[in-house]
Image (cartoon, rainbow, N blue to C red; front, side, top):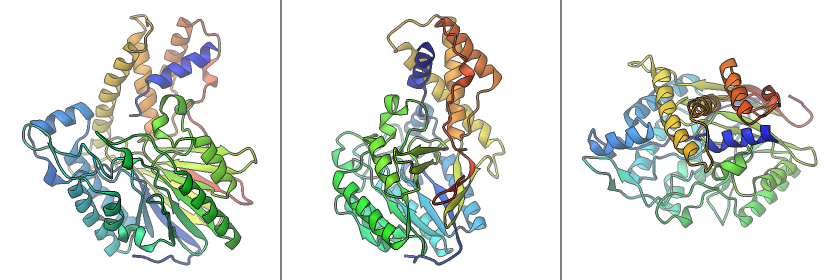
Length: 423
């Protein structure tokens, strides 16, 4: 029980921080998420930007260069499809959408099909700002209908069906596969800012399950994409970070797995992680969560889809032409922000922690978060010693090496199989 208490405490304080389907034996798919793009016209080197970047660890000019590098990588790899799992813009600024759309059009002109879903930072954002001069200034966001109109070339215009209750839709990927794009956002409830938690509306779920039944009768496999996570990616995530999962995630995962959806692409938690959920009936669904392109580790994925399998390879923008140290510098910034938040949360837990334990526990939380965001996290000997020492303060005799902070399968390089195949 005390070992469980330790795990819960650590999790509590962790900082989360116009194409047609093709017929082919395999389809090459790139996947990105959480770009949080801010138009260069909406910021300058004034106090507003400096203060915001210092508080959040974001570096907007560097994010622009990371996207430039990613675009070059995509043009070299030439995937058939690029999927974007939401949070396209920083805070839903109309100008950010317009500038990003121009970037996406440049990819489509090179023959790369682009498919998007909205995230919680994309639509009807009341606190969209420009960071020019001394203070942030409000700017226009976009509506639900405008999002569908603007992104018509990137999924909506080629939909086989669209959901009446949300911006969800389904498109063909090739002759054997469809992609069901869920809108899990609550932008209609926004008042002062974006709402972090997500949900699948009952009519949307009913529509999706009907579509899955129809596809199954046709022998078509339906993959999913959604901004919010469908399943937990760490122990007790639903208890301490419920806003990063859809409401009633277990029920939704159960229904979608039993309906024949083998996997879903997600983002939102800014971590590179894959977790497998098995329903009571024994059906499996893999949640392929991809980390943000706005902070370390600047992740993206290249995948190969074949009948009955998806091979996943993760890539990271680790350097730029004028910055060979991007990876370390961005990791240091994330560490700084994580440490600041961890210290604040530890002090606010409501019970005393020995002074000599505070720096040790803070270091442990920071390390766990930095490992988790890049995926395939493994506790090194120093982390295990810190865990063991903390457990000793609780009188814990459980072998902490039996704790697993990373659910199977592998996060960064893995082949997922379904149907009659096994991994």
